[in-house]
Image (cartoon, rainbow, N blue to C red; front, side, top):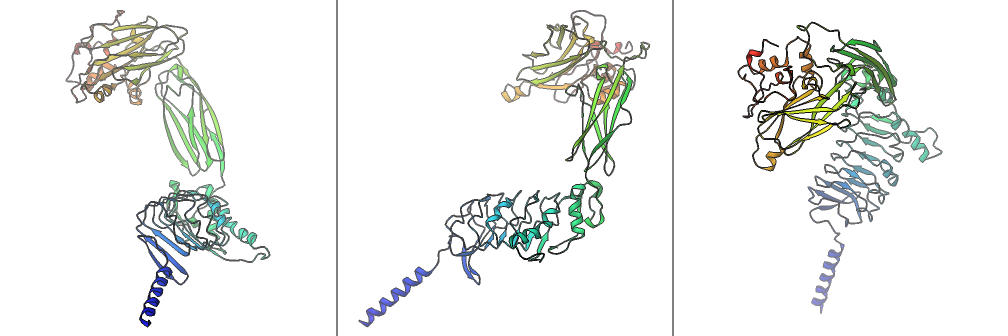
Length: 547
């Protein structure tokens, strides 16, 4: 009987130990510390925080895991949790209600994650939070009221983030939050806060003026871990300490120009200048009537700390370039505009030996370009402005394979034409002129098709725009404009210089309608591209002297 009773006691003890042993998550370790039970999950394989965590835990530590969010729900039954460490995970977002059920939380550590922002109002549910570690994240903004629900905070680490500008009010208002939470304490400092802000890409312009003053005169209750904060921008202040710089007050842009009215001769180069003074430095843009079709180079430089000079460069001005050019300078304070009026006068007639091969059609202007490529064709689009009221256009399309040029008459109001069934490995030229005028008075583009490999992906790469030759109207590179102002040589001569060993006549016959002017044929010159494509050349070398 005694033996049976002894065995019965052993069974009871075993059952009691088995029931008393608390649950621990598989793959993690649990231990009893002085402050309570702890759960540690290192290199956790799950992609989210489990929802069945033990209720009695005081500390949860999950690190080096693929967790990508801090959702709402995992801590519903963990109202006694005091320490939540989620360092070195992949957390990119914290949901607004993620901390709702953690009223006793004292520490939240999120070091080494990928947070870009923090829902600061979520800390309304954690009034006793004292430590918030957010270093080595990607946070780039700190709202002015970020600390309003963190009155008991004693340590805030925002180092090694992407903060560029922060208002000093973020930290100056913090003592007021303390007093509001515990009325009756007067001006008494309830606690101090240790603050880390180093290793952020601070942009030291007028927007950071308040924080710089705060750092220079910092005092209790805020203690800065490292007061030697360094500017990373703008360029002229990079590397300077906060204690070394003086920042001006923010200011709306003020714009000016050396000359608001500019008059030039047609074909001349002109540079329009706009000087903007602002803090922070403004961005400058230009607008003008033909900005969609006429793209000009813009050079921007800083002449002083708060001064920016923008130069709009117009090469070989056309009559249609006359008009108002608006310079717009803006920063976060506001924007200012300045209008510069440009007048382009017709050029005086020069002797034939000194004139360029430019086809001015009075006050009219035509710009022809390839705007789209299909599997076996292209879409041509043109823009005409000036003295072209309700006039027809004539489009000439030629290739080195066709015996004659294709002539297409297009009615007024139409500005596109689709060219289909292009042959592979063939050079083409398209010219547009007004009415029935000879084609040398229009704009031309030259392009070449690639070889057809038979496959769809090869046909999609059929068209290769090899060159837009200098017909000397528009839609040519800036370099071509510069070249046209250097001397009275023709485009054909320039092309022959490019390909001195490849001079022979085209196989295309003269255009229809016939014209004694040879400029439509003379400017066709393309160099070999190294892929075996045939290239267009100028006329016979014997014609070189005649130009």
